[in-house]
Amino acid sequence: MFRKMAVAFLAATTFASAAQAAGPQYFVDIGAGSARAQLGQPAGTGYRRDGSDVASALRVGVQWRGPVSWGVETGLIYLGKFSDSYNLPGATVQDQVQVSAGLLGATATWRADAPWYVTAHAGLLHGWLDVSSQVRPPIYVASSNGMTAGNGWYAGVGGGYDLSDRFSVGLHYDFHHLNASRNGVRMDGHVGTLMLQLEYRY
Image (cartoon, rainbow, N blue to C red; front, side, top):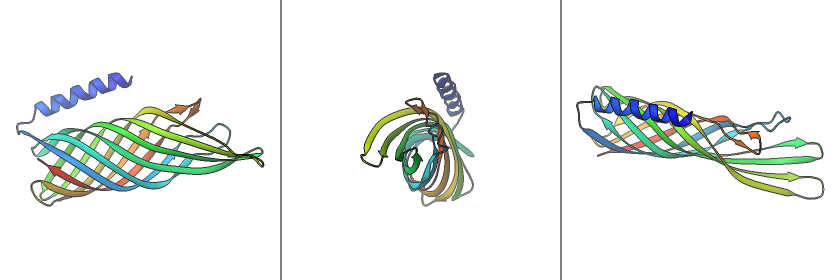
């Protein structure tokens, strides 16, 4: 299913790109900000890994300039580290998950009131979740860790200001949905990010 979605997505973005009259303009985006997550639910505990942390992103891509500039992007994003604890009979579990993802998506930017702009993007993601747990019974401590991965999607909107023909600064909100499991335990969930982004175009 994910493979079919990726093929359809690439075909649609290639068609949209070919339809643009203007030449391509490449861009590099870096961003930093905050993340808010809710991930997973161990069976029978009613517990969810959630919390806030810092987030950062690096994106590269190409846009075809016009009244609305369309393009494609790819990149990596660090979505934060989240931890909490819950109780089981006779023990306390300290749980932690660190989340990152690779992105492939389409972008659209509207500069109706230049130098101000609004932008949106959406696409597919492949997420990596580094999970560690520590169980504390009354006498001894047991630890485990492991990596799991899964697919999902993301979408976001933002706006900003063109400092020059090559540089822009903006504020963007993105929603990332993840599907993953580890040892039969679902790790599905979502992470929202609010980032300040700097873009360089060439």
